[in-house]
Each structure stands twice: as C-alpha cells, then as structure tokens.
Length: 144
Image (cartoon, rainbow, N blue to C red; front, side, top):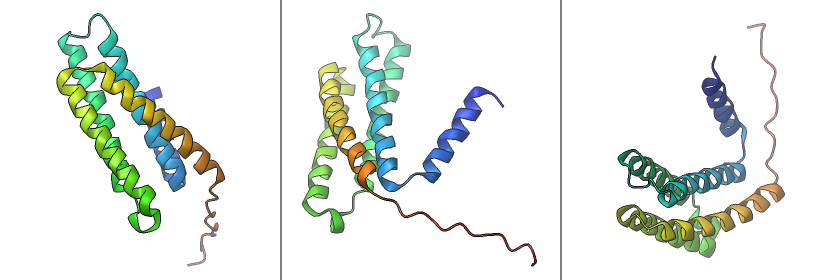
C-alpha cells in the first residue's frame, strides 16, 4: 500500500466516524484549501499556462461542489432563519466563484475565501461544543 492509498483510507475512515458538525468543518477546510490553490495559481506569473488554467478551474469547481453540498445539508425546519441566511450566502459564493472562474478574477476568490474562513472558524467552535451521542458498542453473536 502506498502513501496515497493509506491517506485515502484514513480520510474515508475519518468521514465515516465523524459527527455532522465535524463533517461540515471538513467541508469548509477542503473548500478553503481549494480556493487557496486557485488563488496561488492565479497570482503566479505562469497563471496563463494551459495546465495552470485547468488546475485553477478544477479547484474552483471542487469548491463549488463543496458549497453545493453545504447547501444540501441545510435543515430549514430546525435551522430557520440561520439556514436561510446560509443558503443565501452559499448561493452568493457560488455566483462569485463562477464569475471568478470565467473572468480569472483572483479578488473574488479572496473575498469568498475570507468569508469561508470565518464560517469555518464558527463551525469549528460549534462542533467542539456539540456533543455527538456515542453509538452503543454491540458484541457479535458468534453462537449462531
């Protein structure tokens, strides 16, 4: 097993064993990471290289997919006005990222990234204070 395979298995295990709040934190972390990749490439002198344009596009699209997943995870019944506000923010973020990708506008990426970093910090605090009930451990019935 190589490093990449081991890292992938570790990530899958982390996702399967995390609570809802921690999963949201992981989504924010990955979104911020992807925007950082896009920002770094766009600010580099070689940003017009076709390979870099493709990498930027992939990073932005991955961020948009994550934001769409965050939108889908909102519970409007329990979340009320907060869920509505987050939905509006996520919609705005996706539009800004689409424009940033089309226009190759790094300032729009920086702006969305700053907001996402703030939301990430808030969700980290929420995840720390939210107690996830542990699943009872059951023994195996080996007698049949």
